Length: 200
Image 1 (tube, rainbow, N blue to C red):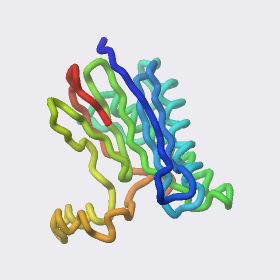
Image 2: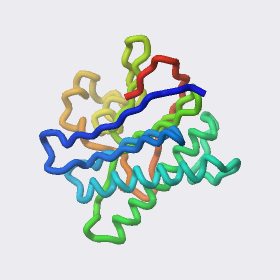
Image 3: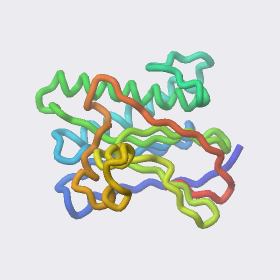
Image 4: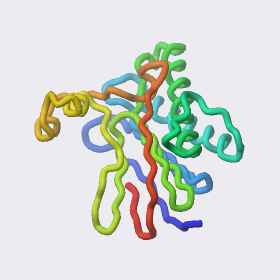
């Protein structure tokens, strides 16, 4: 079993009045999550806190089971553990969406999410929004996630260039996040990590 060191820290920054970031470092489950309340939306900090808490609770329940129920469609391209991670995010999305409907003060609340689950040297990744995950391997930093923003959607469709996307006024307009809709599309990936790698 691979040994690893982990550290987590959040900073409010200089723009917002409150910190809408929440994160989870669960060394037992080897689960790492970052949620960031979507800027300008009500109760973003509540959505990000709920996202982290629900994903952590769900993964703790689901991992010990052999045939755990998966919420949403099972993606055959990925391992069971990666599908578990996606399922946990879908559960968090449902709860945030319902909480926003039930409590008027939470109307419109949402949060981005990026989560990683480490199983020895195999890394499962699941995300929605523009919170990112990077890997530093042999002095090369690689972005492992893809921002779900309007500018990136335009880039994917060939409507703008990569340079235009970098400076687009739509680069911070989120197209996917926890709580926006009743169901969420979660992007997944898997990779093998090596001793000496850093994940950010």
